[in-house]
Image: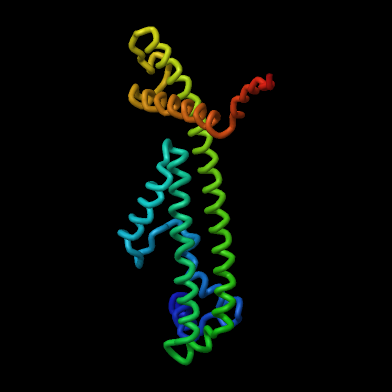
Length: 222
């Protein structure tokens, strides 16, 4: 009596693969979309140097600080890398249907199957796009809150610095719990001073009413 392995091998030789459209679509997508939904971001067929440039561009643009911001930037990197892969997958599907290697392949996967697969890829693309923008919105909110807090802290530190200048004593920002360097606070303080001066000049030159001209005394003929 043949064992199970022998029976399975014999059955496999007679198998022609999935025959229904849903089965062929599922088979095609299994071969394609693992690059969109799997845990591995960089596929063996992709260029590691290109992925590294892609990664560095995002870190250069967003300059994350702290683990939360770095995690969100990494999510943007991974999601956009997968999203950018979709057009190549669509082209691969169309090419597979248009140029089948064998007559059997033409029957197994035709242009109708290709368009069904592309529709499915569009759904994956939409999900990735939503995920990208969700991470981007979270990152922007966190960074905006951080920058607002930094600006408030710098204003307080700058005010303390100017007070110490008036008193003629050195100022150590660490004593007040600030993490900024003295040079950072000095630069920010000078910027605030220039901005206040410019606003004063702007008001005088562009918005203040001109001084009223004194009326001349009437001249009466003798």
